[in-house]
Length: 311
Image (cartoon, rainbow, N blue to C red; front, side, top):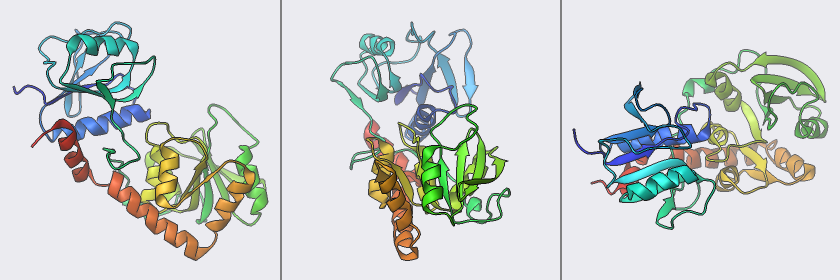
């Protein structure tokens, strides 16, 4: 067996619903097109496991990881979340180079670099897939389209009333349908009145909601890549996000979308998308941005080749 071109340490690999897991899996898949990849994850070393393309190597508990026998260290190591424990493992391994997506408990060695996924000319990105069939058929639970879609930032059994942003938009645009997704349920509001609820059981359900919205307001975008914003943009749906640093703000700025810091700015952003010409221009710009940065798996492989120094 050839020595690995890259070693991936996936501290969050097994947490399927996190953006770190999604991102590191995307990068590992692209790297595997350049050469062999070894994937290391937390767990009992005596219990190896297969996970799709990869045979996972267990490196012990998160608080005491150990480098596995037979895995070379003189290569590029990519870490999803750099912790103090993983930093100690890297210090002993002395890899050719070390890259990480996220870090906590720093500072760490200056030789270890952040692998940028969003923003800037050198961002490697990830591949964010969508199903184009979502554009052909709206969500079966609603008989209307062109609504204002709000992705809530609340978690758990939240109940009513809806998030303040929903009330602001519903009051500011009393004739508009507002759909809020929260705790795997989509609720339809109009004129601040609840019209009905349907479950969001699959990713396809969410894609249909994204694809047929007039605009998507993401109140709690993901901290690593803001995945739902990218998915909305791939369907040509403009995004509006809170005015704070992070990948979602990059998506909004690069795609012609909007950011808001208060209710007035939010209502102004939604109001602009009610004008067909303005929305069409932003929709086209957003689709081009998302496709070029996150929609082409072949381009991601090419960028990973550059990262790994592969020919």
